[in-house]
Image (tube, rainbow, N blue to C red; front, side, top):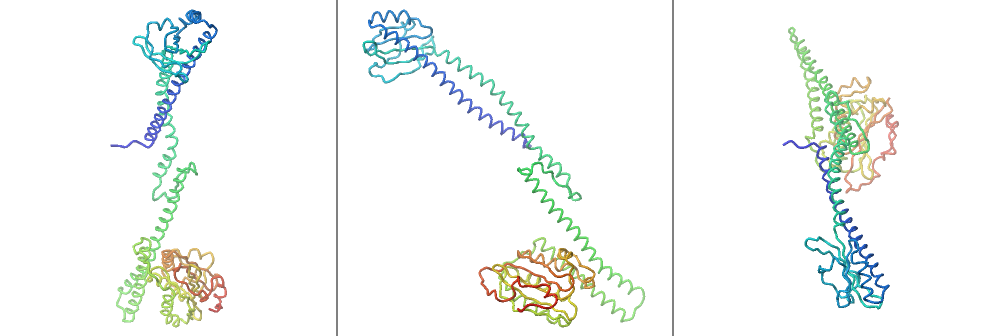
Length: 488
């Protein structure tokens, strides 16, 4: 069964609420009107009794009083009276009540205030009865009883009831129409959002949803969706660029392999020539394998396939181990690799990833430092973090290129172009640091030397001596780039 639209459901809920409100308010109004009509009738009866009592007070003789009452109140509009003495014997009775029996009354001496009640006689209808105890001119207790038909009260009440019964459905229909119009007006931005969202596709990710009212719920929804589309567009563009760059990088070694093979097969070659072809093929194969491994690593990081472990990793010891593995490589190239006394620290993370992080950074520093240069490794602790520094005196990076060094397949200016690489090393480092909730930054003067700083949160339970290492505030990138490092 197809569900009703939100507009129809909102209209029905609004109408139901209005109906309940109308019933409650109508009931309260009718109850108050009925009470008001009865109060007016009782007040009128009390005024008529007061008028009759005034006549009784003017005459002291009982017979003369009865005669006067009979003359004036025997037939008095729609009001009818009866006067009883202390023993409840009739003193005066209106003509209408002569043959009717009123309910039993309380002796006047026992009454406290007026008594109000409703009575009904078959064939005559309902009447309102008031009993009031007073004293005559000789201070004798008298009970005065007055009645009037309830027909007027009921007729007035019926008029109010019919008025509400007539206006209620009209108001309900008006509420239904108004609710439908208001719901349509309120939901109109959703229709605009829906229409615009249907227009957005993979090839039109630059389109954005309209923000009609910025500070209400629909405006917040549009803003949130637009921010989602921004991230999606950025991710898709990054993916397209990554795919294009990966295809380009993979095509180069494949083209070299194909070219070498075709040249080798054109005619018979000497053993040395075949050996050169095999060496070239091997070098390109190794480069191709490294590229594929790095692409696989990045894809796993992006997809979250490799979940980060929560080991207590001795990061300083791990960094020292990585440095020792590069000593021979640095000596072979003629680069001085120097490591300070690293402060003891423990990182909550994955030792394999952290080792790969330090490996990539030190490998880059040695790769881009010419013979006779220097690579320094040191660290500093603060209250919550440990910052690791890898500085070199090699080829610098222009300041305008530093923001792009972590982009995949990005390579800096021509001064670094002859150092072959895949352009993925720093991207992998960035993903590892992000996975460990840290930060990585690159700085330098753009001419000579580069400093890479990695800031990782350390385990708070361990308190270490912060006198080891160099505080970050004392680091002078220019002096490090010139090889003038402060005392560690």
